[in-house]
Image (cartoon, rainbow, N blue to C red; front, side, top):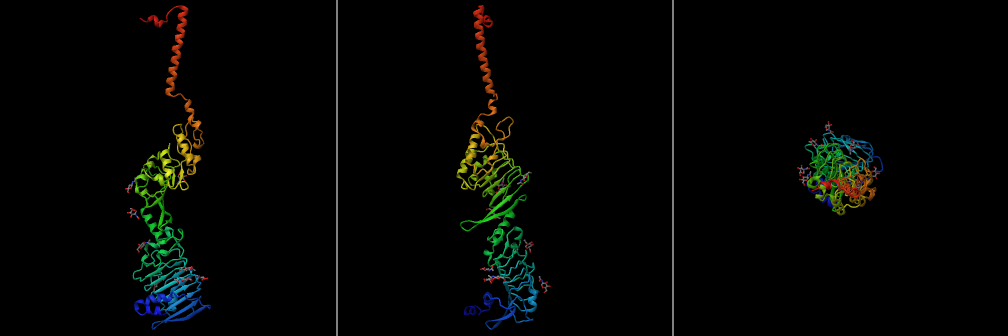
Length: 453
Ligand SMILES: *[C@@H]1O[C@H](CO)[C@@H](O)[C@H](O)[C@H]1NC(C)=O
Ligand SMILES: *[C@@H]1O[C@H](CO)[C@@H](O)[C@H](O)[C@H]1NC(C)=O
Ligand SMILES: *[C@@H]1O[C@H](CO)[C@@H](O)[C@H](O)[C@H]1NC(C)=O
Ligand SMILES: *[C@@H]1O[C@H](CO)[C@@H](O)[C@H](O)[C@H]1NC(C)=O
Ligand SMILES: *[C@@H]1O[C@H](CO)[C@@H](O)[C@H](O)[C@H]1NC(C)=O
Ligand SMILES: *[C@@H]1O[C@H](CO)[C@@H](O)[C@H](O)[C@H]1NC(C)=O
Ligand SMILES: *[C@@H]1O[C@H](CO)[C@@H](O)[C@H](O)[C@H]1NC(C)=O
Ligand SMILES: *[C@@H]1O[C@H](CO)[C@@H](O)[C@H](O)[C@H]1NC(C)=O
């Protein structure tokens, strides 16, 4: 290997050289036990052994590298290796079945620890405590779901290269504490350290950063979570952030939301004012808004912004809505780029007005957007005593029943005036006829005429 020899000529490259030589994958021996492998680096004899299943060597001070394969004890104690091989520099374990790794005593010279394809799941919290000479830690191709929280927090640690990809990293916030204190500049494969569950295949350290930002900006009375994360067509990661502030008796929309909040749940509060959605920057990325069981009497304020043109979900069940700005809403929806498949509305349990002036337009709008209005048949007229349409589904009302209602038969003030006037005319004509016949019969003028001058 002339190339490697060349690298190894200066002491500076000795370390790199060791790394290069040790990445040469050795095959696991056929027979159980240890064999010597001899490799010569410059003048130094670089003593290596490779062991299958057991480390059956006597105390030996000249072994610098140990390869170990098919080692199937659940717990691996590095101190047992040091006891037999006190001068070992490199410990390489592959194709084994381990689950837990415990560190060595203080007096060790391990500068490379590589555990590959060995189902390792956990390391002792203080694994690195006594490993002050460790330069390379390679934990690729194992079953780690997390690391200890303060894994690299040891003064004097000389760690330079850490590899963590191809594991089963769990990306729930509570299992990502370890990512916060680890020195990320040490991690050589940072961009390929990917989550297993949730967010499968997404980079762990980006997820962790998003989650920290979300938590730091979350209103005190809300729960905020990274709901999903998607790559856009330029391969940029876009977080989908969901904020839930339920049952809090809120009178107003939250003052601040985490940046990029797309989903907001505010069910069971007492909110009536929606103006921040139009005016406040916190709401600029909002796509889904759930406001069931609040005090909203009107959404007319939303006409003033572009929100109706870009939203996905608006849920307004059990509010105080009497009517919608049908024309403006229709106009906005026809321009909404999420139409038709990604727009959802919920409108049930509101005291909807039902009369000839408003309802035909409203009904038209309900029909037009029937695929988007998920509770269409629960959108009912408000309760009104004596109204034949009271609590009936609005889409099923006929034009006649809207425009000829019970209260149309009722006597209105103007009708009363008309009736009075008509009765007076009848009265006057009657009196005229009576007076005419009375004059014909008796020849006497009516009393009023006889009194006139
Ligand atoms: C990983 O280890 C298992 C068992 O030790 C072995 O059967 C398998 O071939 C190894 N995988 C690779 C890619 O070497
Ligand atoms: C570090 O080494 C000392 C003795 O050398 C030992 O008592 C201690 O348990 C070791 N710590 C760890 C975390 O292995
Ligand atoms: C880990 O082991 C696999 C197969 O066992 C091998 O292909 C790969 O090169 C090894 N990776 C490292 C960094 O040693
Ligand atoms: C180990 O990792 C390498 C890439 O580093 C990959 O190609 C290989 O399939 C992995 N092996 C196992 C057993 O996971
Ligand atoms: C990070 O390290 C500091 C100091 O060691 C510690 O106080 C803090 O709790 C650690 N944070 C986490 C998330 O473990
Ligand atoms: C949120 O956005 C504001 C304004 O764009 C920015 O100043 C702030 O740093 C962001 N916060 C986080 C945690 O990214
Ligand atoms: C709107 O945003 C500003 C900061 O950008 C904040 O101070 C204010 O309280 C917010 N108002 C409402 C009603 O949410
Ligand atoms: C709101 O309150 C009602 C009754 O108190 C309850 O049934 C419902 O589950 C609550 N909704 C949410 C989203 O908490």
